[in-house]
Length: 337
Image (cartoon, rainbow, N blue to C red; front, side):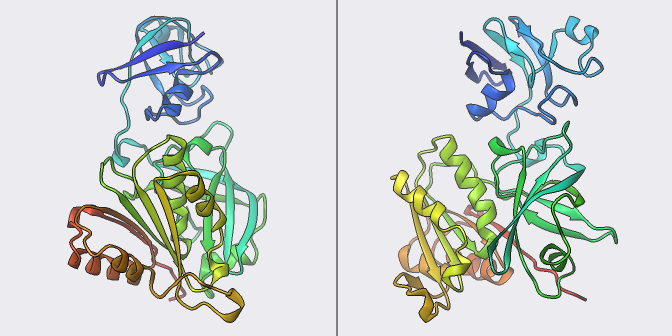
């Protein structure tokens, strides 16, 4: 049996299906309520039941006490409605609403995506989840006090493991470790989520510009958008040197076949004879300039190396893109010295 939940003070409503928790149903319908562990241990999702009743579910007694319940409080990650509900909860509308955490993690899986690109999947402690907006990144906290930043490629709906795409920078202290000494079950420390690179609410068509592993946060954004059946017009331009560098091109190819409102245009700057490339060539941001002589009615989301971001920002604005419609995440690759 399903039940309707109304969130106050926003007035938003969603339906909880049989067997679902309040939090699961809210996230499914794209209402971002706060959460941490998603298993009744941390209390980050605690909110008030204004009307109706719930089964409180399995939780740690210290996280939700009898006194809390007497005040009408519940943990939305474990509570299941027994009736229609009116709840009081703060909805997350921007990155500033999400707490930044420092957490240990374990390398759960490693996979080579290209000769110089490694995918890492990280597992957090069993009582922790990392809430984030698609497009955000995290920092690895290294023993010498340095940090290395990498974007999350998974979506919030699939947060049991954190997925990162790491490009090898020869001589780079951290990426040399990833491609050399790092192994499954290694323990690392992370801090996040960080950054303001996420999809804004808008009716404007969105152009995504990815350079190399800049595909990672855009993969998160687009996967999330398709999961929630966002019908906004979207187009992805992914630039790389050679075909092998488009390491997950089959995914946006599939998206383009499945969604009429999405297009994918790969662009190679230095295709070799072995690529048998009949597609677009040159600099990827120039392909966008050629296709969109007037960018005044668009939003652009760009992720890649700083020179690409800088050139795109300058040239797109010269072609009519409003300054407040350009959102970017520049990867500053760090090498020795």
